[in-house]
Length: 348
Image 1: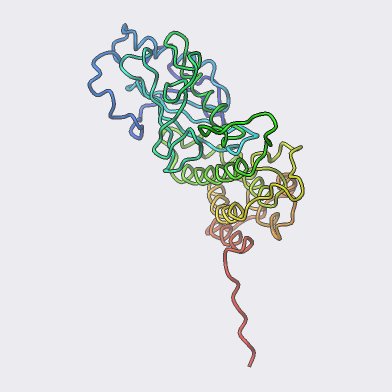
Image 2 (image 1 turned 90 degrees about the vertical axis):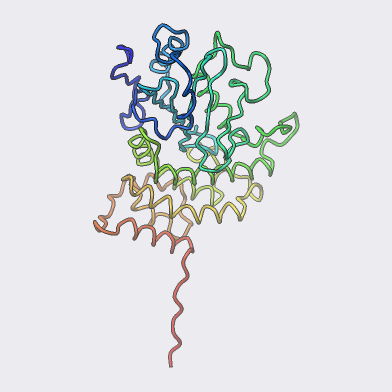
């Protein structure tokens, strides 16, 4: 490992987790078995491929934004893994999205390989359930010449920022081929709203997968992220279910639903009711302060934008040391109508 990268941290993200660092365990990487017959291009310090990858490491170490974290591997410099945080103002807000990256033997002449850890779900037109990432910058999608991979100028940092800004964007429906905005077309049409609803639900399902089984080397990052953002995510779910704001815009304001238009679909409401108890239980295991959340959403008439404020003002009730998560899960199921009330026996 190059001396300047020993103990590298490149700044910190969630709860002091280094945004950039060198790891050793690459056993769950999508491209682990690639490059087995690569020769010495990745181990020879004087090779052009090795030098270029080290340049990439330096760029990431210095310029990664706070919302992206990267792990490179000491014994496999041809591999790296990145975690991208979904941006506010999109249906992907507060979610975590993981990408495995591999370098071909002729890098940078050929672009890097990029695999999305999808858990079998297609959350975006450019991110397939099989992990395929469609992006002009890595030559997996059509685009203008200046949008394609340029061996002399393109970098991994550009790829990651493009995924965060251009793929996981505000209106993912319009990423579909042949679908686009034109003058006079309503900005919020039914198809776009429906796609954003589905994207948010799939993002929530992705969160469950990540909390239950985080990627190697990102265990602390995943836990601390959802410990910090868990309450906000649950509060957003209430807001969207109650039609208080458009999907993706919780906490931003100024985009309330027009009365009678754009109401959340019944399918979306049902999805929220199913996922919310599971997410609350998962976030509770990370230490997220969601204990009072059950009380705040009881009756489903509480304004969700006051949930976080009340949570911070009120001391959380102490839960029993054993079975606390189970109790929370049961209460949420009852509040959201997922359990049937026992019928009273007729008096004789």
